Image (cartoon, rainbow, N blue to C red):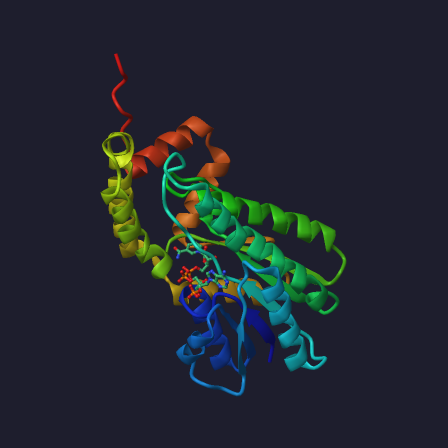
Length: 285
Ligand SMILES: NC(=O)c1ccc[n+]([C@@H]2O[C@H](COP(=O)([O-])OP(=O)(O)OC[C@H]3O[C@@H](n4cnc5c(N)ncnc54)[C@H](OP(=O)(O)O)[C@@H]3O)[C@@H](O)[C@H]2O)c1
């Protein structure tokens, strides 16, 4: 039996990880943002629901202190940070506040969890798994805040891995492709609402991009892997006897990350443009 803390456990991938771990007989510290989300779980002696907001340092410290109390000296074996947000929008149009919110939740949230995890995992082969994305290795239109926030987590994990080398613990990155969860399905209505609010100039410059984005993301649901498939892949990374530093989950992630590594920027621009069919505007005379 392992003692595992999972953030983002109320919904999506984090929820599947928590449910699967409880079914396996692991002791699970399921982190939710709202106390009301406790009702999403069937009560189990192996389950402790911890309320923690990863965008708030004091909340993360309180949450981990509560886990320490419950563990009562037993080791924490793994921490998975799955909590994140994704707000779509073009850089020119999206408010800076959305970037602040995304960085505070995704990047600084990962940092807070990582800082709390390291002293609790080292010395006994503990594992911290940071969930990033194929968008932590490549960058796509409409996802500026999300991509930048996930790239930064990749860098933090590389640094933490080098700093903790020899401490008998592992820092592991998982980079899923498209997964069918609320994060994916919420993009379409959100982008449609932004399109509906655009003024005439914005619509001329970005209308096509937003329309194409909703179209591509809507269709993405047809080929996406399930949250359960993603959770199973994360478990393989988490429990590998000698874990790799990063795991690409899904064929789309493997292909896009490889192409982003291989191709010159302009080729990648072309491929990304093709994917969104975002034709350039005619040049002004
Ligand atoms: N879905 C995809 O296509 C995809 C692809 C690649 C990577 N990922 C990554 O996989 C992870 C899980 O995503 P998902 O698809 O499962 O997303 P999701 O269904 O939207 O769930 C996200 C979870 O994060 C929680 N969360 C958000 N902000 C939080 C905060 N400040 N403090 C604590 N919890 C917070 C949410 O809590 P509430 O319920 O309270 O909002 C929710 O439980 C994320 O890191 C995401 O970036 C997803």
